[in-house]
Length: 458
Image 1 (tube, rainbow, N blue to C red):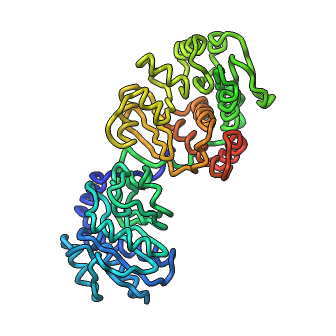
Image 2: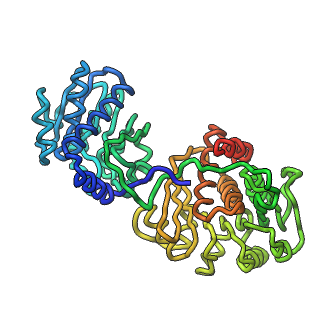
Image 3: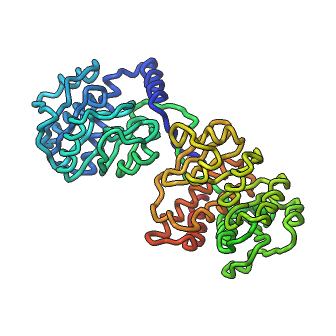
């Protein structure tokens, strides 16, 4: 359910040290990195006049390699530097560049700008003069390419430490970093490609990749595919969206329990108005969705109590999270919580750190899998595993889309996947359905697209 690893700055440095200890020379790694970026820039932009911006560290050393490679291909290249190189490898590659070097401040722009000023590990704001020069040169360029990361973003939290400059292409070196997936930095990357330079690392953090969801086999029936119960309440439409999403995400049997019927549900959706406790007594129920359209009245509280007391796997969303915040705890250890930022703060307070750190802390203290929703959705498990979704379409910022996500996650949980894997699968299906639905989507548009997304996971 998770894809490529995502390494923090410290984990990246550790991975580099392992590779260097195993025999990879620093200057060879720099040569590979610069060559990979030059190749990507050549393929992306063609032989445009290019200005390479070089910083004082190894990211700047990559820039000197890039300039040399592009020059050898016949590209007209200029180099502008913010200062003298400070590392042995960058000094070596500065010496290999035979062309002139302009001061960054005052440099003339070019149609293609390649930013090799600062990469992984930046923790303080850019010098104002450097930031102003970068913004000026980027604004005058037709195309902008970032080496590893755009200069002026926080590697581990995606924060902006410099001007907000949108790039057309970012070439991540060796491994992905949190800023490649966390906002606001992720929104600046443009097209993101990963260059293999012979350095690999492991991390408990990864990106959410397309899951492997096998179709039903000859021995399957509706209950082995999972029985999801969606608890209705004050807003019938929200519960209906969750129920239909569970159906289209692979659940074999979906019951819409209690509450009013919205009226637009498929005939295959089972509707029951008997007491919730009786419905949940059925041993074949494998996952419950509580919260979408639930309400906050006494009946809603009773339904939440019944769901929590049942011992079933559950996905808790929307109003259920508000009620949980009032109770200050009482979260089943196998639950999946799906808060947006406001609900997260009500549940867990103002935790410090990046979105990944905050989600991990919440999962650890609650004992539940936490899906911190947003344009950079983070899924975290109590054991420290975490994953970040690829940037989702902004059109998902629409009423009811979270209800659809809850149903998609529940379908995967009902089929027996562990809570973390189920949450990651549901997030991927939801994001892909948003892509397929296109601009102007509403939550209802996601339902038929979930089936298409599911078909891509076989």
